Image 1: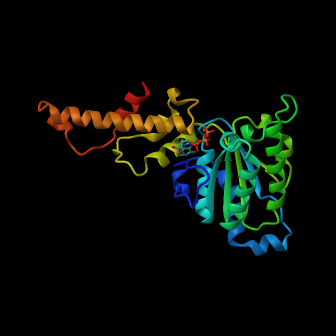
Image 2: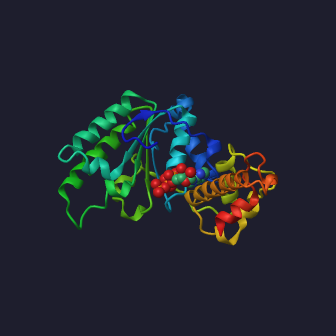
Length: 267
Ligand code: ATP
């Protein structure tokens, strides 16, 4: 669930995440390993690199990866939706930014996740929105304080990195950019495996060939999740229909998702 501003350790595990292995490696190196072995990073004087910007097309796992890294590091996770921080507390946005960072410090190790970073920190200049500019300045000054606060990490997410104010992306702020791409066929296979691992999947299901199917080209992780939901629904409907009609008793076996349910969902 995405309850705004609430901090807890998320229950997303790495095996819930498909593809994205290199993103996982970087995040483990810069966040969870660092929380577990801070002395090594201190010896090497690696004080910055506490902030990341995950960017790429929608629905490919930015939020999921951020939660998985928090779980891996056993860190608290605060979910902030960019536009809400700006709009919900009209006139109080700067205060909201300050108290957000104070709360993160008090529950360290903690990851603050800013979804829709482009809305929270839009490129300054053209429209001259004074409120947005004050909030951005407050945000930048809090971000600069973060490397003195052991155990607070920042992850921003956006589909439009070019519209984020460049000041946010300096080293020491959200200085590391990680691209979360649309999956290729192999990535789709890995995501389908993650999405179905706790479901009753028949042995006739060939996830690799579903992933390689032309109709799946361009699918995001979110599209694949919708496909799995539709296949599950098809399996359930078929079972309901079979148990209603005695003519097809052979179909009233255990509830299983078969290969043809995926193909039905794809067409
Ligand atoms: P947005 O930019 O729209 O916020 P996002 O990149 O943050 O998207 P998520 O919210 O992480 O995307 O993904 C949406 C859903 O799609 C997830 O809850 C999950 O069901 C599925 N999904 C996306 N990517 C993956 C992945 N790599 N592995 C497993 N499931 C995924």
